[in-house]
Length: 412
Ligand SMILES: [Zn+2]
Image 1 (cartoon, rainbow, N blue to C red):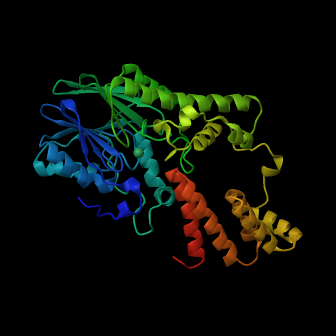
Image 2: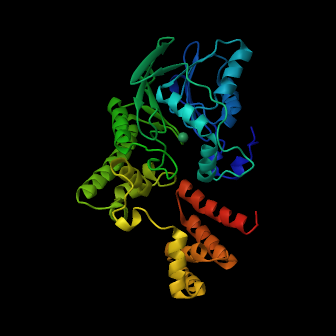
């Protein structure tokens, strides 16, 4: 199927992939997120069902493999890219005269779906920025198909003598499930493992759980599966490799957690902790931890938020003046916004683009008239930083800043 959403041209994250086939009737369809397809003698189990727009593609790929009825759909967690392709699958079951598949998920998926619907415009807004979605495309799901059965800690079921064990974990979300099929030596882990530095501390999203994420990956490593199907990206085959993949990520999360806890105990504040945490080569160079989506800096932010409130240690910042009040005072003292802008340009030429951004913000926040030259220079700085940034989320935030400026300048 061609990428008729048009999103493929916007971001590689919407790339349409193919299906990987493994032994024992295990398959994995790779779209934006993965869908695990497990065939039993007379039925099919689907673990994660992708984005709403990818539902029809999942049905198409599934039906190229087998005509068997889908018995269970398991939501690995309730994110938009994992639990929303359901409608097309239910429609396919109905059209074929199959019984309706039973949808299983952790109990917090229900709360998540309630929250998403209550705060739909908000989620549209933040996801549009996070994923760089153009204005003319919907940025969030509108159709919610709730689980039929939920569980709290563990749940198991059997289809045609194949046993499936569902286990709850907290990691990227508080509603995560990983599925172990001992007879198939296969584990489906959804976003507990994704070929990226774990997405703890996403700049837009609610609290995520670094230490419990590590525990979940250690539990997966403990059972030593021969095949791991992750939430995004290629499968990992071989018990040793699966173990190494899980334990490397777990070790990195524990390492950051330990540092934040130690530094908080030493009385350090947010800025100092963010400046001084260590991310050793072992992690920086691991293909399992590439900062292409999550980022170690974001993880430290999440740990700070988990263990500490929002006070940054400076009493001046408790009930602060507005940024523009402060900028106006500083600009008045300097006497000329041009001097500030010139200094910002000099810093950018020296490669200190981030520092240049702070200076140009004084001109933009404290100036009476919006200055086109300052806006254009800020866009230039943001584009330059985005070019060098590996994290998809961070890059989209920088480019979102450029889009805002384009709008202000009437160029969009
Ligand atoms: Zn995902």
